Length: 316
Image 1 (tube, rainbow, N blue to C red):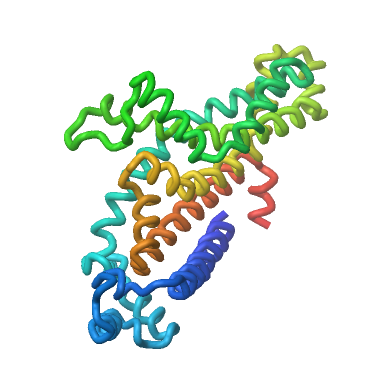
Image 2 (image 1 turned 90 degrees about the vertical axis):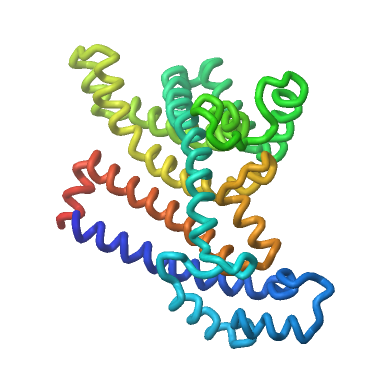
């Protein structure tokens, strides 16, 4: 188990390194100049050249990357736009995004797993077709479309929820939840179809397995068969999908946070891209990569714990 975790951590570190290189290079080749973005469109070429030298943008790309990496400490570098540590803006934005993503996660995971299991237990019937078709339809709806519809219907027309996701500073938990529910719904709609379909497929496979038939023939009550044999085995593939969608959930916050004017990590990355603030942009993408890899690692560990065969393979 320890060797397995060490390999996974080493692979995650290599992935983060490659991700940082790709994002850094991609950010540098984007049109526009960070110095021009900082000084404004009417700045002279001499001022632009001086700012480029101050930021180190006049050096070759590998040298710029090396200076960025060696300059990383606990502050994650210095923002071009604000001339302040990136962590000053990144960590509060990450915390706000985790609040929004956590709310969506707490709603969608039990809802989609229950929906997938119900569809499997009623496979071929009307309930199965409603859940399967509905989940597939929801996946195809872009987040900005569902978000705009929700704003128009529930915030503007019916005035049930506020338009923006940000509550006033010092607001209570219930007030904060009221502001976050509406932007969380498009995230729930996006993820429901993926998780529910996997839960349904794995549950159907478990229901048709030999060990479930044996348990049924032994006279075990259906509830015992379902919870002790079916769900324990059918949840293994679902856990992997949930972990994958966790990373996609954090990465997909750009549209929702921009639409609902929410100052989270996605909005911060979007603004950093527009302002050519490469340290902020790269650090934000790397944070999303860390969240994605940690979620995948946790899923692997949980799967290994639940599956004795994987534990034996890890020992071997």
